[in-house]
Figure 1 (cartoon, rainbow, N blue to C red):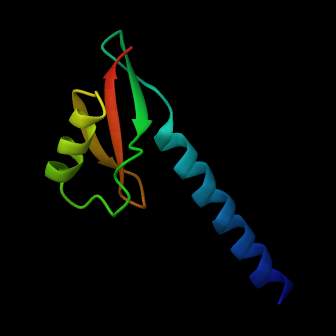
Figure 2: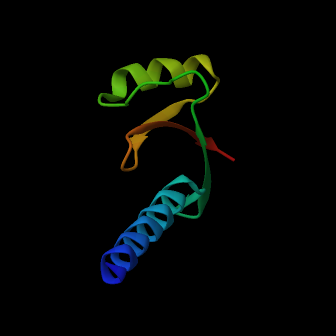
Amino acid sequence: MERFSRSISIMVLLMLVLLTIEIGPVVADGDKICESPSNAFKELCLRDDNCDIVCKIEGFPNEDCKGFLHKCVCTKPC
C-alpha cells in the first residue's frame, strides 16, 4: 500500500511540473513572446478557431491550445 501511494504522489508531482512548464514565457529566435491564459475562454480548447477569436477580443494577436488540459493561451510579442 505504501508503494502505491508513493507512486501516485510521484505521478501527481510530475503532472504539476509539466503543467507549470507549459504556462511560462517562451523565447523564440531572440524575440520574447509573452503568454497569458485566456480569461474569457472557459471550455476545453479543442480547435484553435474559437480560441483565436477570444484572444483577438482580449487584445492578443495570436493563440494556441496548450497543455494536458487543452487551455486557450493567448500570445503576443513583449
